[in-house]
Length: 333
Image (cartoon, rainbow, N blue to C red; front, side):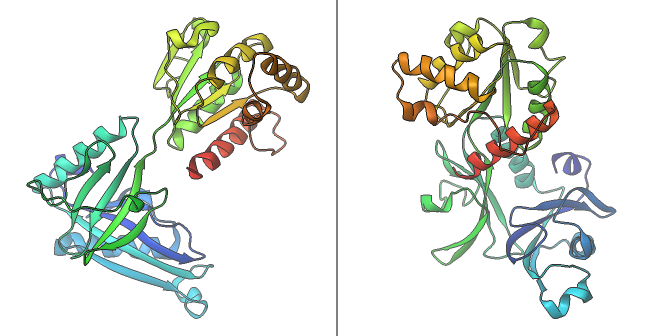
């Protein structure tokens, strides 16, 4: 959007703000459309998306915003060209290249994406033709809506894990999670890690890779990682600070290093700890950790062996199984 506005073009941000039944994609799905067609994104494909693109182009010509519903009942399915029934509510948000607030909003959102802090997009769509966009985080509260220090007071329960509409004091808001706090720390830069980091990055995780070998922890091997760290696996606190919202994947080159890392990160109580390896290896490590004073409950809170059980064999398949498990943990928070 920032690039489009910078080129002096108007655009429409097409967002699914509500859905029910069996629809292709749910609330939070979006695409950006210019006068000559879609720029990026998708709201699910098929005839609804095609029709939404046409409506977006018309909205650009009219320089207006509005909400439109698509009802996919059994009788209408064949007419619309979809194979699944349900209702979709779509917001067509016209953005003018002369709108300085829209430019500022792009800058604000891009900055939020660089911070490891929970944040949410907030749209005031009480008057669909005259939207206001803002951002909410626990540090600054709500910014960008209201202006002049008059931002509305919104209840904390609005800011959850799913995109939803709310009505507060007679005004209608659409709220969507933007950033979910939590870095992923991958210990070991071997074959599985090299497959895992691109997958995790693609689904919105921010990854840091640590290894004691520079050949396995560098930006050339991990171009998608936010950071690569070469250091002593026995002293990870000298290099990293692991917080409660973080995720840890342990896949070093040997059982001894895996145990050393797990022993250290258990004391940090991150949201997720996954350890690669066989059940025999996990049993042996469990005995060591018990001897170190960790409770069986603490040890069993780790995902061992790491990943969802999809009978993965190759490093690429194992990466998919790990990503699936981490997506489920993230969604649960």
